[in-house]
Length: 331
Image 1: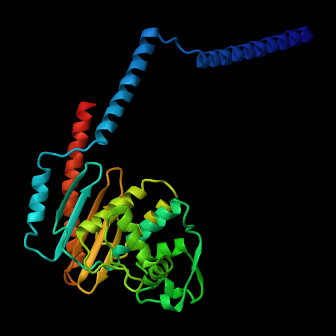
Image 2: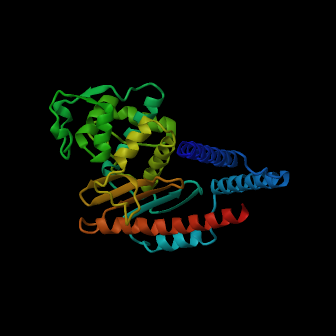
Image 3: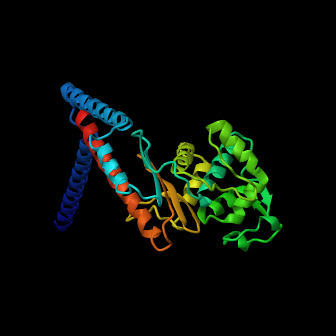
């Protein structure tokens, strides 16, 4: 009797285990099927979803198309006029503002002469990039650093030895980042100041007065500064190693008086005696160009130049905000 009971118990345990296994497989199968099989979407629901996606894409396309077209709020001229009028009679400043995408410019004392200082180094940069892209210059080639090239205010080149071979890219980085004079004069000696004068006259109709001993402008204007920025900004629209080099070098904080708060600019400064100039690009999807030339005192320019640029930015930003509202309203 005991043996029969043990056999029956064993059979019962086996049946229970078997049922548990079957049940587990059934649950697992249900979970798998439930995950793979989705409720069939009705044709109407599918069409509605597709239509919504098309409308959304069309709206976004209209918005982007609108944002790429020029726009000027009604008060734009008035606000810039008021800003420029605040400097009326002031011979110590020359200003030029250009909102690139909105095809809008405003200036003050645009043709008054200032000593350029190192802002004219952008012309050498433009020449080198254009010639490199045309395959006429290899910016990875080297120029030899000679004793005749040595100039003051050359902190980076002072670390190198006379006779050293310097890559053109390194020289460009040096004179754009810290305005290193020796690096720039090595470039000028190898290119030739007359070559630059002829190039910009023939291609852009710009008159420069560079010499190998003085590759700067004694009568430099805000209009000329704005023109150099227009050309450079156009070159920066090409995504290549040259644009990357310039952006990296010009995003420096060395004497960057265009920067204010958390707003940053690609810039090139120029200083000589009482002349303090800063020109640059607000390098965003909606760029603007700014040229600020001054002969303020040494104590005043570091506060006055960013204050001027901030006023320009405030008007620019107001116009951009109005443009975004308008473009969203029609999309």
